[in-house]
Length: 336
Image (cartoon, rainbow, N blue to C red; front, side, top):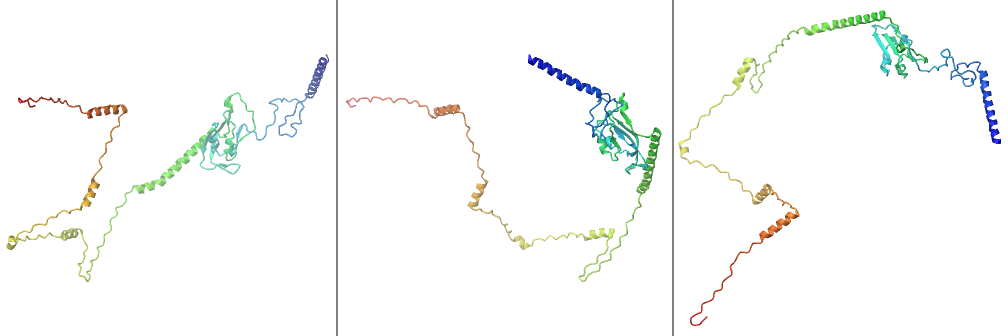
């Protein structure tokens, strides 16, 4: 029984302590907490008041390094197109128009030579990676701490940062076309004289007359004088320089020579080689004959062949008639 009443007492005390805490917070809930950011020094000390904020009229402060909605400062943009190229989801769309001359300077002193006819960012595609802000050379593209940009229509998430009207865009395009046409005409004018000079036929260049070489004076040795050769004289000299064949007269043999007996022509005998050289040459020329190895037969065939060979080797005995012994006739005298 003692344990039973003890448990009842503990339950009543725990309930009363909880109700005291609840009623105390109800008294402090007459006012709400001020929205303090986590970076504030008194963030953990302010623990009294209503926690729930009346959003969107009240909101907690966001740190300055928060990376949420993109923003482009178009006055500092040089339209280099690096942010559109590096974007992994293609959420940046740019239409650039080149300018014949520089038309302004950014805040860091970079000259501006390209007009931004279109600079749209579709935040419904953005993955908040921050690569576009990293590659921007003038740091005009940044990620702001605006985290709440909800819309009823998804098309309202496309933010346009270009400040050019349709009339200005048409004028800039026309200026660019005129500049390119003028530049092409100047280039054609420069190349035209060169083409005309190249197309004109060049005058024929006559060969310079070759002066005749002076005649060579003969030296003490009495060599003939060399005269300059012309086309006719060269042919004539070549013909005259060829020696004419000289025909030798046939010499008839004298009468005394006819009677003389003709000498026999010597006959060349072949050289006799010694036997040792002949034998060595024969040994060299002789090729070894191929040796035919007998085919190896299985055991059963070898046994059958051996029995046949034995039967063949043993000749059959020839039939020899037995000798017949004849009795000698007895003589009349009784002599055997």
